Image (cartoon, rainbow, N blue to C red; front, side, top):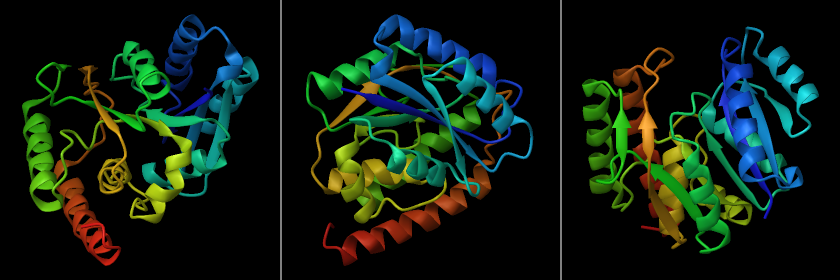
Amino acid sequence: MTIDITIPVLNEEETLVEQVGILHTFLIQEMPDRSKWKIIIADNGSTDQTAERATQLSHTYPEVKLVVVPSKGVGLALKTSWMQSEADLVGYMDLDLATALTHFTEAYQKLTVEQYDLVYATRLHSDSIVINRPLKREIASRGFNRILKAYLGVGFSDGMCGFKFLHRKHLAPIMENGAQNDGWFFSTELLTVAEWLDLKLYELPVVWTDDTSSSRVKIVPLAKRYLKSMRALKQFGKAKGLL
């Protein structure tokens, strides 16, 4: 099966070339048939030289493509990229490659051989190894996911980890049934709605290394947005008869 790997970026001129190069080298080693995969750089509103760097990468590597997203928002970047895709499988990972790349091969196998509909990484599984994560962020993540389980009745352990892949054929029904957020919460909506639709999900324990130097996450404002989005998603689910 073909797969498009989207990397949402915003003002990443300093690390873009190196990180995409690492991912590209890894994919050549793991999937030598280059017709089977693409790396999609989804630039959502950068004001630095990110788009220019991405364009250079697309000239260097035919398997790399730039998608320019009209405004900011990780969810918007993913939706824009995936809706343009013609691949069998779509997914994303963060530019910092926090999730060890070896897990990509596992995710691909789960989708293609074991016929899972969606695979997501979790940092909160007992078999996961989390390196360098500040205690404050660890506590916030666990607290948020507990609220998700209690409020939305979901079973997944980690809605926020930036490493998810799915069969593209499921994207439209997932979006039609509530995964519509343009921001970070879209990642959580994907899993929530997939559960509502009884899709076959696989939880993938991972080795995950926090890049604290590049993190721009502000916990309190983000938590407020997430809680608001959570309420909206629950109301949508009830209206659609999914809850």
